[in-house]
Amino acid sequence: MRGNGSRPGGAIPRAAPDLGVADGEPTLLTGWGRTAPTLASLHRPADAEQVAELLAQPGARGLVARGLGRSYGDAAQNAGGRVLSLLDVRGVRGFDPKSGLIAVGAGFSIGDLARLVLPHGWFPPVLPGTSHVTVGGAIAADVHGKNHHREGSFCHHVRAFELVSPGGEQRTVTPEGTPEVFAATAGGMGLTGVVVEATLQLVAVETDRVRVDTERARNLDDVMERMERGDEDYRYSVAWIDCLARGSALGRSVLMRGDHATRAELSGGERSGAALGFSPPRVLSAPPGVPSGLLSTPALRAFNEVYFRRSPRREQGRLEALHSYFHPLDIVGDWNRLYGPRGLLQYQLVVPFGAEDALRQVVERLAGERAPAFLAVLKRFGDGRGMLSFPIPGWTLTMDLPAGRTELAPFLDGLDELVAGAGGRLYLAKDSRLRPELLEAMYPELGRWREVQAGLDPEGVLCSDLGRRLGLGGGSRR
Ligand SMILES: Cc1cc2nc3c(=O)[nH]c(=O)nc-3n(C[C@H](O)[C@H](O)[C@H](O)COP(=O)(O)OP(=O)(O)OC[C@H]3O[C@@H](n4cnc5c(N)ncnc54)[C@H](O)[C@@H]3O)c2cc1C
View 1 (tube, protein in one colour):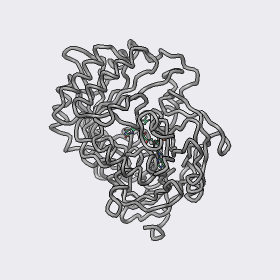
View 2: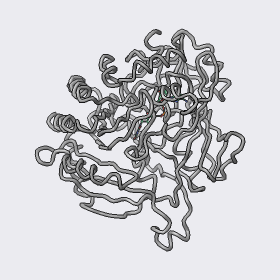
View 3: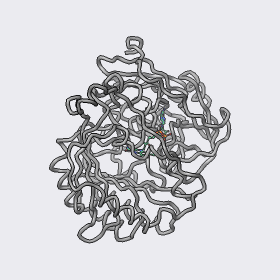
View 4: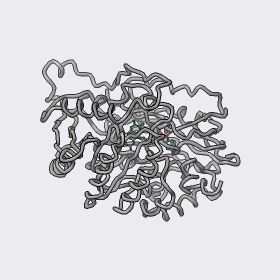
């Protein structure tokens, strides 16, 4: 597709974000959770050649790639070493508006991709809960969206990518031609090399709206039953769960499912004036210096109560703008500051179908502990893709928790054991605290991944704080 495609004529992506530091300058980096900052020299290569040069001279503590820093924990950090920001490697290499194949630089964000291709009737195949994620970060974490139960994760839609390995060699990786390298890189958290470009298959859409059906479920069993019965009828499905409700209301939820609206579903006026556009507004910004404790359990319980009561008991066919269905939080810039100086942890688990009892126990423990879990979300997953990809067929539960409470660590350790014992796992892109001994149980393909990783990186150049903590990649040696 390289060279054969045309440049899309849609909105021109905005300039890459300014990191505010000179190239190579020591910089304190964190993930989105703002916990465990570490210092690394931050490099900003302009193209694949500069990436290759940096990989050929990794320094004593190695290096790792970084996108928009939306992983919650320490995956895109490298204490005392180098971090390569890919944000300038973001050109559009080719686009075929007939087939919906597009080749973009790894630093291109999913939001910019949507903005660029939507006017042509195409849309990114998988959207995580924020649009501020790069294509490179989406491959490295093999991100999932609300359509995983039907359409799999991001890498299911990647047709090829360019990977620069330690030593500077660049190779084209495809699912058919190089299946092992593909499967090790999809979800490999940047530890198999630096992705500099990817070719993706987009999905065709007729409008910039989602047709949403909403229903309230009285408890966890009720919502799971509704999802099991009806999810296959919807492309997108997600349930918001009240993790503070107890007793017969344990796990009460608001289930929101939908699909892309067709032109025929728009009203006459909307149809005639309809332009396909993706323009999420950013109207608010969280102030710096918010004290800890703002998001306390009583405050969250009050929020949950209002949210549950205000959601329609049953509503069908509401047309919602794409950005407000997919990325409601993007409207508030830097909302992670609302958690105060100690930051937040996101805990995301998946347990296989058949282990519903373990999921119920997790929700019971959360409610019993009165853990201030905010924005808990339940989804169903289909098949996984990469060796370390997070999704397995099962139930995934995600929640944000304020960091820093002393009782949180043992509480989450207990949940880890429960999840691992049920054949489940935690999501590395969200993790900042998992103990390495549980990794093997959670990721049965870890041994195979280690072999492929060692073949690509024999000197152990690719290092991250996550890798050091969990004994992955060069992080186990440097
Ligand atoms: C509000 C919010 C909602 C989210 N919702 C979801 C969701 O619904 N589903 C989901 O799956 N995830 C979700 N995430 C997590 C996010 O999608 C992933 O962590 C993603 O990897 C972040 O991409 P990034 O560009 O910010 O990468 P970073 O956070 O900068 O890096 C993440 C990992 O990717 C590696 N990496 C980055 N670029 C490259 C590259 N070019 N080559 C090789 N490796 C690279 C890094 O080394 C690191 O290991 C959410 C995050 C936030 C903040």
